[in-house]
Image (tube, rainbow, N blue to C red; front, top):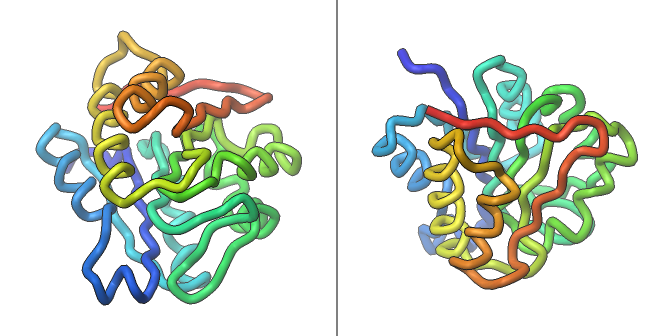
Length: 186
Protein backbone atom coordinates (compact mmCIF):
# COMPACT_ATOMS: atom_id res chain seq x y z
CA UNK A 1 0.00 0.00 0.00
CA UNK A 2 1.48 3.37 -0.99
CA UNK A 3 2.25 5.88 1.72
CA UNK A 4 -0.23 8.73 2.08
CA UNK A 5 1.56 11.98 1.29
CA UNK A 6 -1.37 14.38 1.00
CA UNK A 7 -4.18 14.69 3.53
CA UNK A 8 -7.27 16.45 2.19
CA UNK A 9 -9.81 17.76 4.70
CA UNK A 10 -12.98 19.12 3.17
CA UNK A 11 -15.89 20.88 4.84
CA UNK A 12 -18.63 22.14 2.56
CA UNK A 13 -21.49 24.45 3.36
CA UNK A 14 -25.02 23.07 3.37
CA UNK A 15 -25.63 24.88 0.07
CA UNK A 16 -22.49 23.31 -1.45
CA UNK A 17 -23.73 19.86 -0.40
CA UNK A 18 -27.21 20.55 -1.83
CA UNK A 19 -25.74 21.83 -5.11
CA UNK A 20 -23.15 18.99 -5.23
CA UNK A 21 -20.12 21.35 -5.26
CA UNK A 22 -16.87 19.94 -3.98
CA UNK A 23 -13.15 19.86 -4.58
CA UNK A 24 -11.54 17.32 -2.26
CA UNK A 25 -12.67 14.02 -3.73
CA UNK A 26 -11.94 15.23 -7.28
CA UNK A 27 -8.48 16.38 -6.19
CA UNK A 28 -7.88 12.95 -4.65
CA UNK A 29 -8.75 11.29 -7.97
CA UNK A 30 -6.41 13.62 -9.89
CA UNK A 31 -3.62 12.78 -7.46
CA UNK A 32 -4.34 9.07 -7.90
CA UNK A 33 -3.92 9.46 -11.68
CA UNK A 34 -0.51 11.02 -10.97
CA UNK A 35 0.49 8.11 -8.73
CA UNK A 36 0.24 10.10 -5.49
CA UNK A 37 -1.60 8.60 -2.54
CA UNK A 38 -4.00 10.98 -0.81
CA UNK A 39 -6.41 10.54 2.05
CA UNK A 40 -9.67 12.52 1.89
CA UNK A 41 -11.93 13.26 4.84
CA UNK A 42 -15.16 15.18 4.58
CA UNK A 43 -15.92 16.69 7.96
CA UNK A 44 -18.96 18.64 9.11
CA UNK A 45 -18.14 19.61 12.67
CA UNK A 46 -15.33 20.31 15.11
CA UNK A 47 -15.18 16.75 16.47
CA UNK A 48 -14.46 15.23 13.06
CA UNK A 49 -12.19 18.10 12.03
CA UNK A 50 -10.03 17.34 15.08
CA UNK A 51 -9.94 13.63 14.17
CA UNK A 52 -8.88 14.45 10.61
CA UNK A 53 -6.16 16.88 11.76
CA UNK A 54 -4.66 14.19 14.00
CA UNK A 55 -4.08 12.09 10.85
CA UNK A 56 -1.58 14.75 9.73
CA UNK A 57 0.84 13.51 12.40
CA UNK A 58 1.59 10.45 10.30
CA UNK A 59 5.19 10.69 9.16
CA UNK A 60 4.51 10.23 5.43
CA UNK A 61 2.02 13.11 5.19
CA UNK A 62 3.80 16.06 3.60
CA UNK A 63 0.89 18.30 2.61
CA UNK A 64 -2.33 19.01 4.50
CA UNK A 65 -4.97 20.52 2.23
CA UNK A 66 -8.12 22.22 3.57
CA UNK A 67 -10.94 22.64 1.12
CA UNK A 68 -13.81 24.77 2.40
CA UNK A 69 -14.91 28.31 3.04
CA UNK A 70 -12.70 30.75 4.87
CA UNK A 71 -11.98 34.39 5.58
CA UNK A 72 -9.43 36.59 7.32
CA UNK A 73 -10.61 35.40 10.78
CA UNK A 74 -10.58 31.63 10.18
CA UNK A 75 -12.22 28.72 8.37
CA UNK A 76 -15.79 27.50 8.20
CA UNK A 77 -17.03 23.99 8.82
CA UNK A 78 -20.42 22.77 7.66
CA UNK A 79 -21.62 23.26 11.22
CA UNK A 80 -19.36 25.84 12.84
CA UNK A 81 -16.46 28.22 12.51
CA UNK A 82 -12.82 27.93 13.67
CA UNK A 83 -10.80 31.05 14.44
CA UNK A 84 -7.04 31.00 13.88
CA UNK A 85 -6.47 30.82 17.65
CA UNK A 86 -8.79 27.80 17.87
CA UNK A 87 -7.11 26.31 14.79
CA UNK A 88 -3.75 26.59 16.52
CA UNK A 89 -5.13 24.87 19.64
CA UNK A 90 -6.51 22.01 17.51
CA UNK A 91 -3.67 21.58 15.05
CA UNK A 92 -0.51 22.16 17.10
CA UNK A 93 1.75 20.11 16.92
CA UNK A 94 0.09 17.83 14.33
CA UNK A 95 1.06 20.12 11.43
CA UNK A 96 4.67 20.65 12.49
CA UNK A 97 6.89 19.85 9.52
CA UNK A 98 4.02 19.92 7.00
CA UNK A 99 3.08 22.26 4.17
CA UNK A 100 -0.44 23.54 4.82
CA UNK A 101 -2.57 24.41 1.79
CA UNK A 102 -5.91 26.20 1.82
CA UNK A 103 -8.50 26.28 -0.90
CA UNK A 104 -10.50 28.88 1.01
CA UNK A 105 -11.26 32.52 0.21
CA UNK A 106 -9.05 35.24 1.75
CA UNK A 107 -7.26 32.89 4.17
CA UNK A 108 -3.79 34.24 3.33
CA UNK A 109 -4.85 37.57 4.82
CA UNK A 110 -5.15 36.11 8.34
CA UNK A 111 -3.52 32.67 8.61
CA UNK A 112 -0.07 34.11 9.45
CA UNK A 113 -1.52 34.55 12.96
CA UNK A 114 -0.75 30.88 13.72
CA UNK A 115 2.98 31.69 13.60
CA UNK A 116 2.45 34.17 16.44
CA UNK A 117 1.40 31.25 18.67
CA UNK A 118 4.00 28.73 17.44
CA UNK A 119 6.81 29.73 15.07
CA UNK A 120 7.10 26.05 14.10
CA UNK A 121 3.34 25.57 13.57
CA UNK A 122 4.07 24.18 10.07
CA UNK A 123 6.83 24.57 7.48
CA UNK A 124 4.87 26.73 5.04
CA UNK A 125 1.36 27.81 4.10
CA UNK A 126 -0.07 28.24 0.62
CA UNK A 127 -3.37 30.11 0.56
CA UNK A 128 -5.42 32.55 -1.52
CA UNK A 129 -5.60 36.22 -0.64
CA UNK A 130 -8.88 36.82 -2.49
CA UNK A 131 -12.16 34.99 -3.04
CA UNK A 132 -11.71 31.94 -5.27
CA UNK A 133 -14.15 29.51 -6.85
CA UNK A 134 -14.15 25.75 -6.32
CA UNK A 135 -12.94 25.40 -9.91
CA UNK A 136 -10.04 27.82 -9.43
CA UNK A 137 -8.94 25.92 -6.32
CA UNK A 138 -9.13 22.57 -8.09
CA UNK A 139 -7.15 23.73 -11.13
CA UNK A 140 -4.56 25.57 -9.04
CA UNK A 141 -3.90 22.79 -6.54
CA UNK A 142 -3.89 20.11 -9.25
CA UNK A 143 -1.05 22.10 -10.83
CA UNK A 144 0.71 22.62 -7.48
CA UNK A 145 0.70 18.93 -6.59
CA UNK A 146 1.72 18.00 -10.13
CA UNK A 147 4.73 20.31 -9.81
CA UNK A 148 5.46 18.83 -6.38
CA UNK A 149 6.26 15.57 -8.18
CA UNK A 150 9.52 17.20 -9.25
CA UNK A 151 12.45 17.87 -6.96
CA UNK A 152 13.59 20.58 -9.38
CA UNK A 153 11.11 23.19 -8.13
CA UNK A 154 10.29 24.78 -4.79
CA UNK A 155 6.85 25.54 -3.42
CA UNK A 156 7.51 29.28 -3.70
CA UNK A 157 8.26 28.78 -7.41
CA UNK A 158 5.16 26.61 -7.75
CA UNK A 159 2.98 29.32 -6.23
CA UNK A 160 4.21 31.75 -8.88
CA UNK A 161 2.98 29.26 -11.48
CA UNK A 162 -0.41 29.05 -9.71
CA UNK A 163 -0.69 32.80 -9.94
CA UNK A 164 -0.04 32.64 -13.68
CA UNK A 165 -2.88 30.14 -13.96
CA UNK A 166 -5.58 31.83 -11.84
CA UNK A 167 -4.42 35.43 -11.66
CA UNK A 168 -1.51 37.40 -10.27
CA UNK A 169 -1.48 37.72 -6.50
CA UNK A 170 -4.21 35.13 -5.92
CA UNK A 171 -2.09 32.68 -3.94
CA UNK A 172 0.50 33.53 -1.29
CA UNK A 173 3.42 31.44 -0.12
CA UNK A 174 3.90 32.06 3.61
CA UNK A 175 7.08 30.44 4.94
CA UNK A 176 7.48 29.56 8.60
CA UNK A 177 9.70 31.98 10.51
CA UNK A 178 11.16 28.89 12.23
CA UNK A 179 11.96 26.43 9.44
CA UNK A 180 10.64 26.72 5.94
CA UNK A 181 10.91 23.60 3.82
CA UNK A 182 8.66 21.96 1.30
CA UNK A 183 8.65 18.51 -0.14
CA UNK A 184 8.39 16.59 -3.37
CA UNK A 185 5.69 13.91 -3.52
CA UNK A 186 5.47 10.62 -5.35
